[in-house]
Image 1 (cartoon, rainbow, N blue to C red):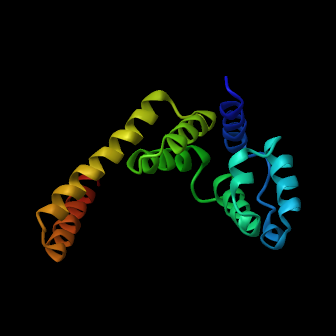
Image 2: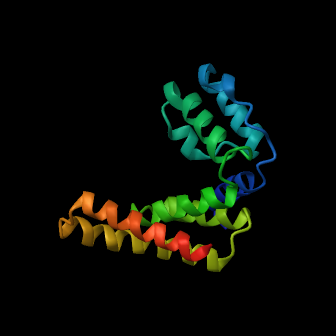
Image 3: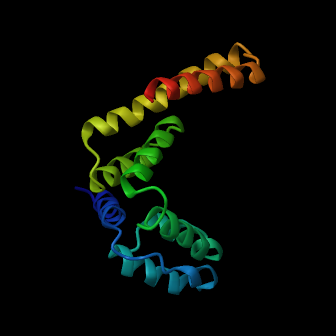
Length: 158
C-alpha cells in the first residue's frame, strides 16, 4: 500500500466512523495552522491534498468537509453520502474521487452490490439525460408525465 493510499484509507475510515461531532463552527475563521491541527486530530494526519489547498481557504474547505461529509448528524447517513459521492465521481470522471468514495462507502458499511448499484444508477441517469436533452423533450410535458406516473405508483402501493 502506498503512502497516499494509506492516507486515503485513513481518511475513509474517519469518514466511516465519524466519531467526532461537527464542532467546527469556529473553523471558518481559524488560521491555516489551527485548521491543520484540527485535520490531524480528526484524521490522524494531514493528507497532502489538504496541504495543496490554498492556506487562505483551507479553514472554510475543511469546515465544509467536516461539517457535511464527516458529520454523523446530517439528514443523510455516511453510507448514502459516500454512494452519492461515488455516483458523481463516476460521472466526472475522477479516479481520485472514485477511489476515495468507494473506500469511504465501504468504511460506512456499503456492500459491493450497493457500490455497483450506485454506479449503475449514475450511468442510467446519464443515459436518460442524454436522451431527454438530445431529443429536446418538452419539459412541461415531461413534468406532467412524471407527476402522473408518480401518482399512479403511489395509488398502486396503497
